[in-house]
Image (cartoon, rainbow, N blue to C red; front, side):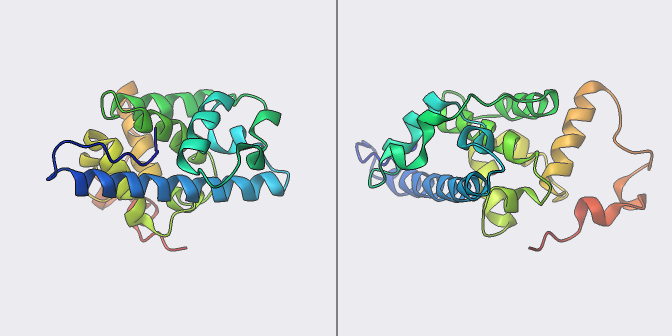
Amino acid sequence: MFAHDSGWSNDQQQPQIEREKEFDLHVLACVLSRALEEVEAGEATLTGATGLSRAELRDVLPGSFTAVPINAFAADKVGEPEPDPEEELLRGLLQAHARPGDQASVCFARIIARRAMRRKHLWQDLGLSNRAELSRLLATHFPTLAAGNTQNMKWKKYFYRKLCEAEGFSLCTAPSCRECNDFESCFGPEEG
């Protein structure tokens, strides 16, 4: 799913595809690092921290991190993740905009929806270095959703705005974002 594959037929596509796969592995390593911190602190299980099922973890881990034995993650000793309704809505939004037929996009939808339930900026909760990495991940795996964020709104705020729009109501009462008293909360810098 995330594993390195060099069997591409079109030499002109290979560098782009390889860069995408390498970036996906980077993101997955960042997420697993944050998840393992939570596991070690007794705050979550690996499935609870990632939103991935045991079966998905068994598929992802050995193929992506061949040097690390699967039992190092204790993936067999955890329960299945139970998403709450809010996480389900966000997962549905992401999956609706996922690249068709791309299993990595499906996994990232589950991971992002789960990590978005944390309190920090989404890029921080994913363990990424900065917001630009999150934007790249979203543009790659959820291109239509990412393309709609034309005003560079913070990603969690943007997701919730899209969910509210889908339900037919507005997130706030301001006539436009520029006139809102909470403008900085939605559009300000996201520094760590």
